[in-house]
Length: 318
Ligand code: UDP
Ligand code: MG
Image (tube, rainbow, N blue to C red; front, side, top):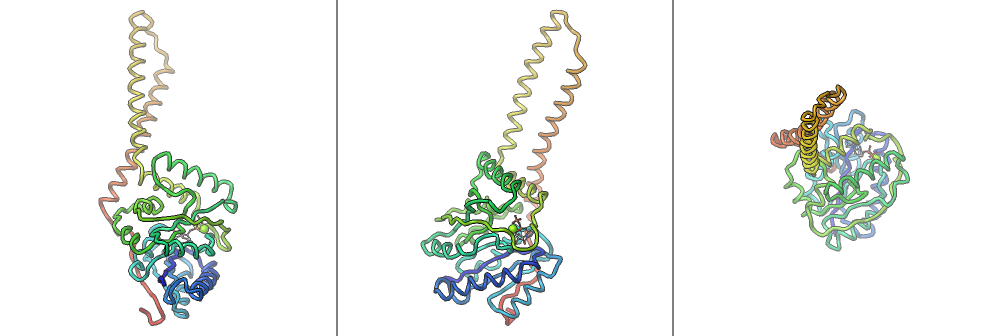
């Protein structure tokens, strides 16, 4: 029987964590009773530098029940880093890890299917949302546009899959080989390979608390995904540059003909318009290039992606 760990990143989740731990524990116990997972399977919460009581609740849970464990990051590092911290910390202690959000928007009843697929030899099982009824109109549409854009840019990501997935030990070991600092796990995991499969589920609404992903973070996350995985934007800049150059040659030829024929009055509008247009395009190009240069800068520094302050597992304080 497989030892399965659940890893749950939490940021200011005091409102949901009791309920989440209760529901997850029930699920784990039924899996243990059905002999689908081993008795020493665990639920690990990763506190991503919360400012509320999240960590004290996690500690309390772990003191009272050895099924729970906790990892505390020294400061808020964002969902992706918190998740990676969890995965890397527990990867050698279990056979497979299932990652999910603290708000249980991902349907936990499909965990059985995750485990079945793992037993069939899949090293990665992706949870895929069948529909997005519970998301707002805005979030649903922007998210879908994002997946489409990523595909156009040639990035291999699973449509409608967030970070609800199972990863086996070998997949996790391979994940640890990826040294990049700009983390976008949804893009990295498909690069690992191995046998994989998907499990579809319906996404629920957050039962308490509010989203920790406001628009600003969502946009930053999308930009991260694109610039960490695709160089097509750079190529696009190059193509625009070439096109501008060719059309300016054509314009030059036209102006020369005008000059030869004696029509040399140039409109003020043209001059001003071209200054602004060229200025704009140059700025755009610089911006895109800057984005990549910035990436190189952070990658070469190779800073640690997270720092663990504490790792507590069972009631003996191990
Ligand atoms: N989260 C985190 N660090 C952050 C922001 C979010 O660990 O800086 C966690 C959060 O606690 C939750 C998960 O990431 O478990 C997903 O966040 P949320 O449910 O707020 O996002 P949404 O479902 O609205 O996209
Ligand atoms: Mg959520």
